[in-house]
Image (cartoon, rainbow, N blue to C red):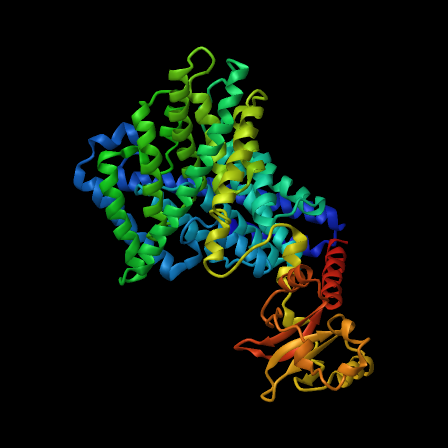
Length: 586
């Protein structure tokens, strides 16, 4: 349905050569519309899947206790048996929580995502969640929306910069439709997916986010995703407890990240076919569900109970670690679903238990645990994603309460600081870093990271033998008009570099000209760079050492110099990329 609609609309846009800003706005609205319907389809598919497995679409806590034990264990296994082959043979990008794959597509693939990903993601996530997988639906909706945005961009033959913007539009629409929160959707795409708040990028993202929210509200009503209690600050002394909650939330967020990837490594190490691993994960998950049904699926029902202060303190404490375990099993084994909702769940339980503790000790100056559960939801999301702005705004949109902003900001910022100091990458970027891809935030850094040294390097290398006398070295610097001389041994291996700075102190001593040779004055501790490295790394290395040029060495032999790259080359390449962006926007 979505694909057919896109095929009808895209030729219309291509035919009429509209003003670029109007054109971009129309495309953004269309992406928001289609992504909104994609989100509606995903939610309906999850309900249908749950009904197919359990003949019930109500809250899990209302029907799960009456299900036989063999079904509680067997149905998640069956879900895994269906999901494994679907992802393995359909689209492997649909495995896991999906957001890192979108970030990778934006960073190194020009925003191009295979068209089949949206369909496979809908089916895989619906089966995973419907059968009991302890994951969220926002990750799938982000990937579905991003795939729709990418597909439309490819149909329009959009340049890479605009293609990335269209992917961001789809991602924003996915979050907005999930939580009925258009501002948070736009900020999620700008802060996490693109790392760019420029007006030319942010404006269409907002349009897509708002459009998807309208679609979602039309089908599901203008209701928040959670039943939010009225927040009221009992005493100014409460402000002292929220920074402490932020520290705890940051530590819990790091624990979640570490455990998730430990399980992923453990499942990767198993010597069984990839498409059977989700079934094994289903077996382990089903064993948990027999005793603790609260960790079933998305978990919104238990979050609402925590917000209303209806869960016992010890259950709140236990569910923190049980949800971490259940989500890690589901995703680590190869299931499909998001980590945003599990982060909210873990935060609600963390804050609920913390609130119970402080209220028990200081009943006169603290509110009930629901308020702390609400703040901790944002704090754990901030800690796992390293995106405090998105976390703050999404909780604010859910509550529409200004009173919660100060404690929420305290907790989210402190949680992010704690989590980032304990773990350098977020739950999204760490997955990419484990593949060898390190993303930088900010458009300027992304541009430099996308250009390789091999694209701008010069093959003109001035070399001298290591036994050349100082007098000839000086002549070489003068006649070759070179800033750096590369000192080589008899096997043509790099032994050091010489600049004018290295020989300045010896110029006054003419008697040394016949005594000193090149290797005596060369800098032997030198930084080199390879053709496959980014110019961002070259720029950072030159900045940290104070030199203006780096030798480029062979990929497999760091002693063989094949060229040079200078600061001037790097800045020229960057300026060209910036100019190309301005031309595309125009």
